[in-house]
Image (tube, rainbow, N blue to C red; front, side, top):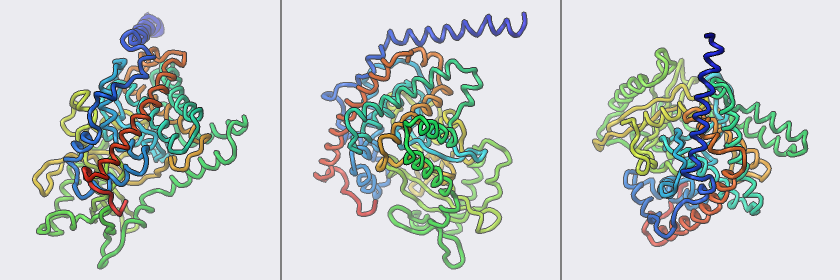
Length: 478
């Protein structure tokens, strides 16, 4: 028997079994059932869930978190991944499992540099990653477009088209992945040049204008300038001949102003050298450029919306001299918001949970991605994951997006999520469940509209809790 006849005899039967398993999942959960998400009358108090989540966070940063979340229902949604996890857990699902991002809203996608120094588009936040039903990520992404569309005052028809574009792109990309060769499916990724080509094609077909093309070009140009040297110029000053991260409390607080006052600067530096040596053991390569860098300074830095209040540090290192800087970011990694509903992670270290999930879902990952466990001055051990702070970062600004640009972005995000899921789940089963029709797309669009209504209700309850003093008052500094 030749290799060709073995291939013909075995692989098609296996693929057929996987397709049948995907179609069988429709019997457990019809695609039309995906529009349901639970009973608003019996769900948990959203403010109580947020209060529970904040018990492990830095108290003095909670007003900053609340300030950022109260800007709009969309910014509230960004910080409310726990609420959505609780709601999704009450709904039926397909049972088809992937590595979930866990917080796949539209602002958690963007451009960054690959190790090959290409500008790629991918998911860029994995704090909540955990295995779970594939549709949980799809629903969070779809609802984010509905909510952002409301924030931008898009019409009902425009918002519906936006959500459908994201889900249709997910379904069609998953079907392409299922039909592709194994390695083509695994290697597939999207870069800035491909998106530019799409825009040129749409312009030539008169479906997109020069303004849209220029807007994407501006995002790419800005991303290439958002690098370690720009971060260095913005964040670093010279004090007594030494490089130091500038203080900007409460958003940026140097380490010496955070740790116990009795701890000398030399002790802090010695401790950081030990921590960096331990962190190096989690990196993918034995001989790593990190070995050529020297620790200089660090500071606590507030980042994002949902992450505010967790412990996040920026670490300044230098290479051959002071003109060769590197910034690392160490973010606290607690239990995923999904773990209360899907069970605990297989990894006892939550930094490792984040890194393993990211490496599995992304087409290309940061070479500085690793993890570390640290005992704080309060005696509590906390998990962190580490990555490079800035390396060609770029994304769409939801506050300024126009409908045409948002339609392209919805397509890009939907395809990107499908690529991540096709690597970490069974793409053949999922594609068979999704099918050729738009039944799944329409159901998710109905879900997104209904859940956006609930999000607005939760937002009002959140604002009322701040007004009543139940939650900490907003901060002057955002």
